[in-house]
Image (cartoon, rainbow, N blue to C red; front, side, top):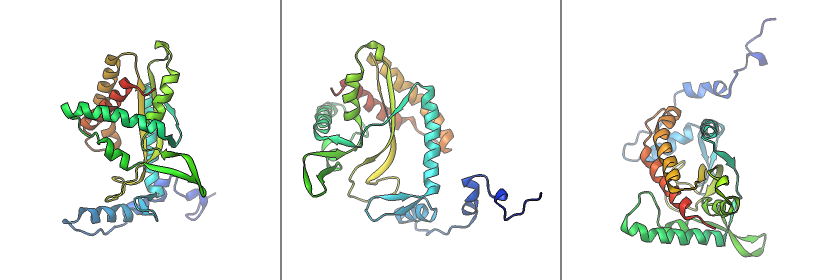
Length: 256
């Protein structure tokens, strides 16, 4: 039996193929060399990556965009499984007492950084400003406000302290795919500065500092190559090293 063009069997075999016309059609963007932000917004909206939402700083990820995110997750998940990393999920809400412990550690680190500054580490007061809080249930005030996850160090390391009872429980390598909320109020920009965004965070624990340092160095060497093959553009290991080293500092201090 012959299959006609209008039949279901003749339909494209993938989502990408189904939307192929979008990659072929001409999109006319505003050319404004003096206003990069306007050009950038034009590209991500007309490229059908995002749609603006009623809450400033929040964006709807359209199917074309979310499929990219799913591809990134699949690629990195496969890599992390080869490294012995397991996926977990921790709650969205963070007790105030745990968040205050993180602040105490950050203040201690701030004193150390005064002697030897570390790149990419925001001051504790800046991080505190972007935390969103739940203070009501309906019309009833909560006795204890809870924060909406700005990151997960405090709640994860609180559990680490219970899970790790001896050297037999080490190393512990966990990863979490989730969304986080940081109530940014200045210059919201899709994929760059937003109130809610998807991300991945890896947290590990080792028996001795040398093992932790070796893991950081290994990831720093491997990440640029693997990420370059994923995104098809050069990837610097500098950012990875700085962030991983920051995670290493938390890992060594611990938050019981």
